[in-house]
Image (cartoon, rainbow, N blue to C red; front, side):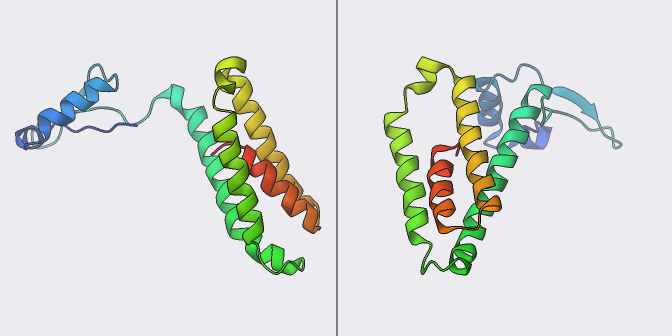
Length: 151
């Protein structure tokens, strides 16, 4: 979200007009006016919109899940007897690249909501596979699914 303070001192700064123009470019219509204890008044743009809460939660959960996978897999793969987890990360990267190249037009054809649902399901199934199945093949399966999922 965009947080923009247009205090007189900020507006006097050389980047003040640029910041105001940037706020208009992203659709900020009118900042809120606030008066502080000293009598100084300034305006700001709220840093949250109700419409952005659900996508923000989905993004946070996705980033948290992906980070957990990246941090957990190297140790877990050694525990299961794999020599290195490099192949798993390579598979993840290849799947991610293939989806980006060949699946770039899928959201336009199938709709963004359907594509996000498919990506989140693949991601969730991959994370559940790592958590529920103590086998090397499950790590390979999960790496492929998580590579397909959202990033």
